[in-house]
Length: 393
Image (tube, rainbow, N blue to C red; front, side):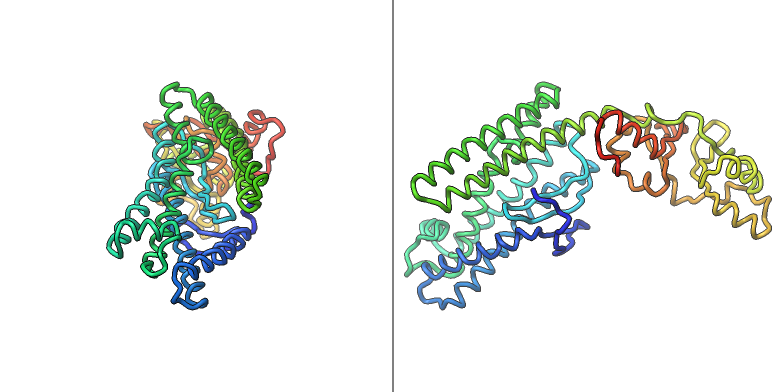
């Protein structure tokens, strides 16, 4: 999708920022214009003002359902420790910007399926409400917005259309073409069967490009038949899916390469550290001044990690005339940054704690500190893994 640098903030739900790309406002206006005309047709007793007010309400409900779809992805991803940087609405729908790609077939399947599941639930609710408002035939007519003017009600007109458009969204998203949700589900299944993420991604990407070709061909056919609006729309969808499939495959390949490099492979295994029994004065003279570091990890007699002590706190004690205060008392119990030796390079790149401190202690599952990985080492490893990559991370 287009760059999100000009995204207009709309709301925050479950701690996730919802925004809109400027192209979304164009989609909103087009939808209101089209729905206003449709509602005037199926509700002959309604005024033009009422018809377009209903169109605004229907469009708002549709985009709310899109946000719910993307929240399904985001909240499922959160279960696996994948953060969502935001949800953006744009010309062709919505997208949840996840902090990283899936690590396992299960992650991929659950996160990909969560969005369509929410859409399917919305369809079910729509059918239930519609049947409370009218008969199945009336709901069907309202869903296609071609019903009998004498029997279609305001409620059925909105509920029927919303149910239909979400059903169409579900069917479209379930097409097994990467990067649509169906394509990601297909990748998860292929990944689980072959145990090879790269092969699964390549196969799903090929399906995505094939689907784009079919859409493009149908768009050309529609143009030749004189249906310019549908033809251009299908061509736009084809262009988007083809480009997104290519970009998603490339991003997956890059993620795979970064995931192969771990903190344990690039760390410094002999960093400066503080014994648990040193004083503030000893910490300053033996560690902070000679090594010129802003903080140091403290270890017990068996090498277990206790936390970090900052040079700022040590020097504050010295300035206050307390050189013999035990440095262990200067540990912050709420700030014990660490990373496992098997942490992948892409996880380190996304770590805000790494950016804040400039380095992270590498601590194994038993609590023993194995080394220190610095942001400079991460940048160097990135350059080696991806020659020519933009290192402004």
